Image 1: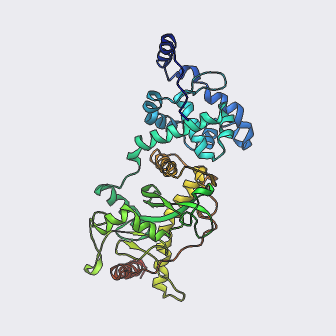
Image 2: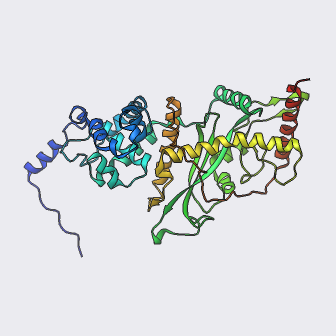
Image 3: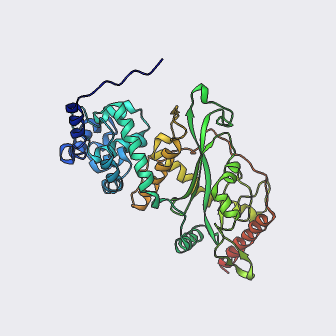
Length: 397
């Protein structure tokens, strides 16, 4: 059957359509009262302690301060103004300002609530929430890249200094961990690859963080059925490290002339490598090794806490996503990581009840990787001796 013929349009109709496309697309003044309307409508539905504190209420709903919110708007303004999706109007028939579009997107990501619920809070429809959120994600993914990048030499030296000051680990460049983003999938898309060890369909996210729990590198898009060690080996970061292009700059000389290279700390799910130090396993360890494990665990907890903050702040990552587009989900995850870093870079203090109270991968047992590199083992032994020597030197005589 042939496709139906297109109806003919008069020149007058085409001219009218052309003129409509020239309507200004950022009527800020027409929608500048969005916050007052939102606050009046939603403040009473949340914690009663917020009803008299608009500043804290703003952070509660959007996870960032008003100053940081304005900065995020400045990053995406050009994109949201230059290529507006169709139909971006509220129930009063007014076009949405950039500020209201950003607020809708942030609320969707922060709450993880349905598009219908988020739309009701702002007086817009479900389709508008969908369009606005995705437009925001596309824009921020492009415009905020500078908030998530591998540090240059000077910045890395600062990170290493702060980590040594906090944990006594010389030349440590950060901590690595992984988490699952759980989802449901249509029957036609299900496969064993996406089904993880806990029988959930999920996508993996690997992250490396610094002393301030800022993400320095992330990897996502891979099926949850993989182990974290397999994800690591599939990542570009692994290839760069193995090729000497990451974690291969300044070598640190310790007491006795022993050298230690740059490295990360990670859990037992990762292989022990020259640039990735994992804890000792087994019971009845000597005191010096138990002490190392304690220090190692404290440093590694930076990554664990970062994921708890990430998934607690942007709750869309902590709820079971209903049939997400697996091609778009990595962008959603990346943007949440970018927002996590923007909050840190802007100096915003995270509200105490926002981060997850439990582990970021609740219900998942820790995987165990048995791969041990001999140079990695030597590195770990050197660190044990260094910590012991530092403790003995610092002990009062």
